[in-house]
Image (cartoon, rainbow, N blue to C red; front, side):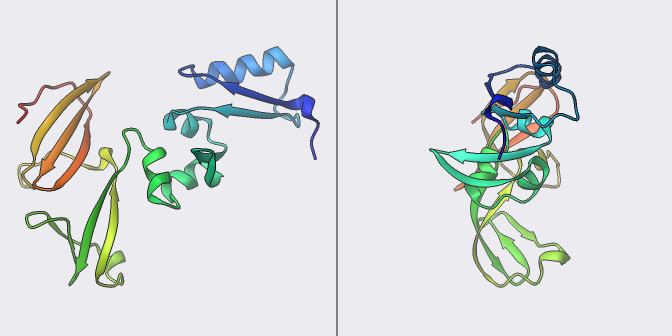
Length: 178
């Protein structure tokens, strides 16, 4: 049970988190030791991570997962939660695990790490964050379909046959697109 007078719901689109926290405390004379509850609604996963508290992931009115921001980000319960809690959305693709290889398509096949070698052969969904894909001359060949500059980053929409993914590059750079 809690007193509804201490429950406040905020919805902002792009307001700095520290400003909200300070303004909330100042406006309502709330100290760190108070029993007040602040509910902050956002569609921006980064804002939820910056608050670093308990979060509820909701999609189309249904609760998909609850927990600390860190736990939900690192251990999404479903592919939908993984997509929602990443910006850009996590790359979710079908794959086949066979003989210690993760097979994404005929040309993209990766040896799985030791900690995953106990995974049975079969069909799976694999999630790869855009920030975990990087450019390397020794890597797989992908066509750049779209090169999108966003602030100090570049989002590359990539394709290798039927495999599509988005990579985040930590620089502003234009790329030739196909």
